[in-house]
Length: 247
Image (cartoon, rainbow, N blue to C red):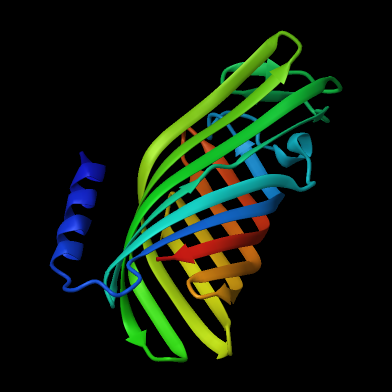
């Protein structure tokens, strides 16, 4: 119900915004090489063994991607939909016994660890500054999180799933620093005593032709939760390349 209400509210805001610009729609397809610098887990958070999941899944790069679809209903108003799946898995040997999600996993045995964090978001943003050289956005994002952590060792397996809604603040800025070139900073984030979520990217875009741009940059995704049922904090980095079409 909360997601339906947000979508309805954003649609009403966009409908009342006024005439649409010449290029009202945009699609951006992004590919990435993703790697972890941290992924600490304890399930349950108050009694499970806290251990580094990334030692099982590995620190090497894995493929990732995301898709943006945007609708600029007026020069200063935009709705944006994001689909961003992420899955990382690997095999290694546990260096100590681990109690995870009600099951026990022995040290010294090959163990498979899997981490999935799929994100679906709807954003409304307003362009608070708009010149030929510089622009700035502010807005809010409704995020649906679909996450899963799983361990497998021989005939023993256990997993923890987590699906929930998270409200985020959105800020962004762009700088046309040379002919055909644009630098963009894009951030969704929130903080609370029980946890935090940050998704930030810095990308340089080059206009290949009218309405079609190529992007290259870096994204960092960091956050997690700390409560009785779950402790999990991860930090993922991505080298990204994207193609955007505005029409």
